[in-house]
Image (cartoon, rainbow, N blue to C red; front, side, top):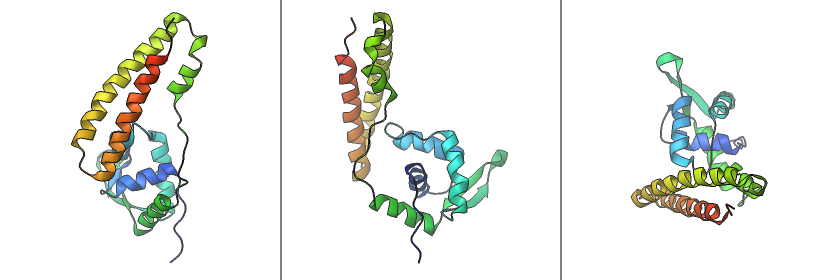
Length: 169
């Protein structure tokens, strides 16, 4: 059996979601936002760019056609092998990519009013996310999802702490 093709993180994210059953591109976008949108984002354009590439590589096959020409995708045995290989051969570390953190790094170049707006709006968003992530973590029974949910709580709490540390004057 040949080695499965290497996949990028976006393809792996989609393959991981498809383990739970066939989905259309739109369903994958929604599921990605719900399942891991707080720490790994995929855009609609990324999803629709990756799906035909993965199908052509034999990682997916076409499933049922839905309303308004929506197309379901089903993970294949090769897709499951490629996903498992991606999981197993991870690099271990990665970089945080946050436009907000980059903005905060340069917030000293904003006016006091602009900086207060940026911090205030961002703090509202992260405070709401913190409440949501705490609720999700409390309700999670799967130990792997629980560990990631707890990370999401800690990361969101750290973002609130960072926002509170930004001088507003």
